[in-house]
Image (cartoon, rainbow, N blue to C red; front, side, top):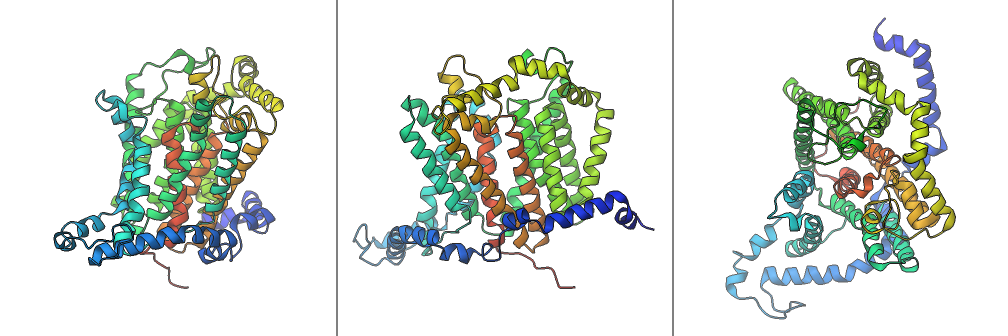
Length: 507
């Protein structure tokens, strides 16, 4: 009797099969996956929201198309200039090159965020760009994208089911900003944390055009993640010095790695997002050489994740791989269980860190001056202003830490949001994130291309891992992580519309 048959007939196998059957027929799964009508982009386009957005965008779109056509053909009557271009310009030497510039190539810069940001911050000559280069890149993309399409004579926009929830959340956030901003400068900076980075979703959902481009971008992200992870392993080998407050006084930890990111918890979250994507590349790789290469990439990632000694990241990784196993291949769950059993034996500090987290001493310490204490502070803020909160940027995050004396990180992004924007704000955010998960799961269900389906599963697992990690950290306070989250979510939503997909033959 083979292993698969033994698993199917075992008690655990029958329990897993029964749980899977119950999930497949549950109302929650049906809502998350959506109906057939929901899964069609045409249904979104024909909806009231789609028609309103189309009508609003239609007029400037026609202006750009007509202007671009006039410039390309050298026809007088441009809506902006009403002049016939000089023959030198209409000879295509200049304008054909401008029209040939591809805005989607800027995705390479966004994917390279982690190294570009580090490089700019490390050099005194470019430090002035460190806090603004990503905004400049975002503006450049939003300016170049429609102009490029106009010059090509084809203006398109890819509607997704998440467009309306994002716009609605932004409207709610702006409403709360207008009615509850005790200090305008702090409120603007705090609002930016929520609203600005969501715009990367539209970049990812519209500038990803074909399967080859998706594969190349993902492989580049894996390479960057491998280099970052290798640096983390190097830090562990040399025993890089760390601040005393990174480890509880009751624990003994040699060091905690942070690579070029600067924080073990943020590095852990980055790897939680990336490891499932790398696993998807490994599982879909053709040929032993590619499988070996992806395995070699995974080894330093896993080691670096362990050496962060970030318990929140470890638990988020377990959650992410559990989601991936349930979606894509149940054997991933067996590998996860084996790793959870073996890892504490190979690295005893893992067991010690988890054991201390579950001990009464940790609860007492955390209640006195740790996460639990800060969570209680956040809950008290919600009680004081239940509907609209304290105001953006006024509690529990980086903005408050810079501007408000005695402020602390709350180490729970959702409680921070509730404290700053009240029950209205946290309800809108949670609905948006659930809608994002629903949109991604709907993408996964629609895909038939084996590679893209596996990639979608890895992306969803990584993104869910980041959402889980936000329960114990302020991961969405980090521009690099928030940019990657919304960009990858947008790319996931775009996968069913990419060119070059393969449909497996029917059995």
